[in-house]
Amino acid sequence: MRTATITFHASHNYGSMLQAFALQKMINRLGHDNEILNLRTDRQKWLYPKPDELLSRKDVKVKKFIRRMLYFPFVKDLQIKHELFESFLQKDLKLSRVYSNLQELNNADLPYDCFIAGGDQIWNTSPLDFDWSFYLPFVKTGRKISYAVSMGPHAEEQVTSLERIRKYLSSFDAISVREKGTKDLVSSLTDVPVVESLDPTLLLDKSEWESFINSRATVKGDYIFVYSPSFNPVVYDIADKLGQLLKKKVVTSIYHPRMLQYSSLKYELAVGPWEFLDILSKADLVVSGSFHAVVFSVIFNKPFWAINGAKDNRMRTFLENTHLLHRSIDKANLGKKVRGNIPCEFCDAEELIQKGRIESMSYLSKAIEGKI
Image (cartoon, rainbow, N blue to C red; front, side):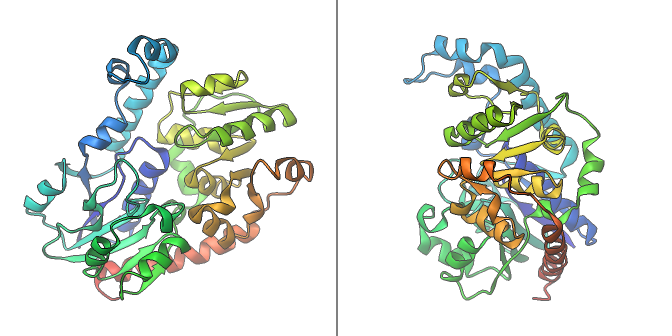
């Protein structure tokens, strides 16, 4: 069958791009052709500018010369990062022509048998790059399904326009979501049965991901890898304290001027999706405010701490389902958990993930083929 996926494939975000890659890979493995609808809205382009565009922006809060001073030492590596993300889009994903907005999708003659709203927080209405296209209102013929979509870490608080969502969900043939919070909210809005499925990144095992990495990064020695998609001071405060306690350097692949307060932080910024996996897979410890960094820590059997994971719908569901909720940490229990040297065992997680893969792939196959 000819299938099309719509997701956050073009966000310059490691998890977003890697889950898009994984879902396309698994749809192909089921024997179906797949293209990702290459939706790149103006809002999304504004969120992920080239470094020279960022430096030339007018901003009432940060004057241009101040921004240049704060970013200038990192511009070269940030430019390489931007190019690596764009290269991933062109080389590692099969994309349709570019669409800029919902109207263009409405006007297009789309030659697909099945449309998949697939993966990540595409049903969360609060991100700046959210677009109503992710609810597939432009589809005129063909099946409409979702796979492992999320409404975000706090769906009940973040999602708006519920009546509009209710209308769109009523036309879906099958619905799969990623976590309990999203399942509860979606189930309250539609009579279509809602199932929980694994995030697409979990459909590939450790050896498969390792085959794509091919030792691309350059970090040497022992280190803690800290990652949050955007600067979150709680995440970096905890990583800084852990670096001091464990006497290890702390490496990050993102930059924000407020991070300059951490004098011991080491920047590895020329990092695209594959380099990100290489750095994470070789770390001694991962400190994360990111759902996907937690997921990849488990895939690679890396000790990790999920910052405020117990309070995040996405991470909590995953950690509970893999018997790893004790790896959630916050400022209040940091000292107790670190001093307690709580082991990070993955035997249960691997067994439970393998069971989830079978169930998730079964759903995906049946949903595409109209057997649900």
